[in-house]
Length: 168
Image (cartoon, rainbow, N blue to C red; front, top):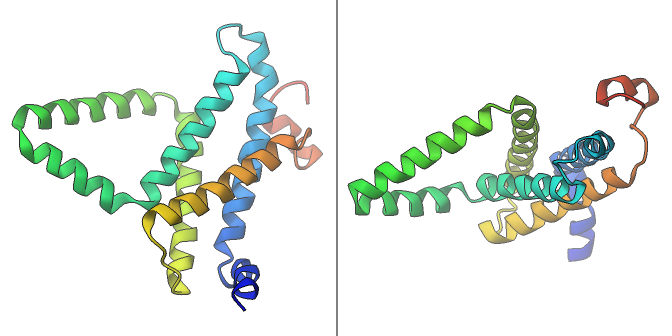
């Protein structure tokens, strides 16, 4: 009976399918961008994929465990005024540098929206596991979708080839 419930989960919580579809499209988009990186010798393809997957996992952790992260951060900031200033400065500088690259910000916003919708849909059907379990499950769905999208050699539809880059 538990296996049947697990198999019916995408039907009961369709935002999980949306999350998987978003991950497939993101993986496909990143694999299409990858040949353009071969022209630029300063960026290695392995480093590109490592940064993109790490960015996706950070978004998963932040979106699935915000209360735990904020509680620990506020305890750390309350311990000392100097630590508080250093943390705020680090967050502002990191956020500012990150916002300079708006194309990356769009990917993060899309992933975060899909993750939060999936969490909301799971909460709607009263499936609320521990935050660590939720992060692992949603991260696995996201990584499987990115891997599948990366394996697709061409854009999902030929008319989209012009949107993703030259030489398509």
